[in-house]
Amino acid sequence: MISVTCDRETAISRLAARDGMTRSQADARLRAQMDADRKAGASDYVIDNSGSLDETRRQVVALARVLLEKRLPIASPARRNGFPNAFATPRK
Image (tube, rainbow, N blue to C red; front, top):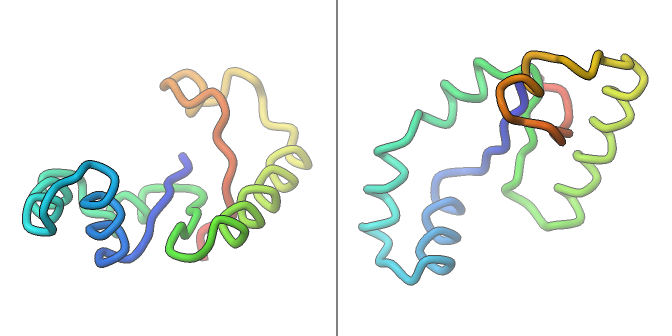
């Protein structure tokens, strides 16, 4: 499984800006979701999306290379569960 995460303050700021909501509303929406650390802990690979688009892009490209080197089967569990184009970098 691959997850994309960022620090909480970045997530709140981005969500509020994108959806035109208050920081309080954005925080409430994030609290209603699975905890980011728990999701990352259950993932095989994690992309840290806290930085710039270029930094995120570099992580995606690096993971794509790793996954292509592994030549994972097309019917991987992630693909069967609705994640057809997942790329990221390995979790530390």
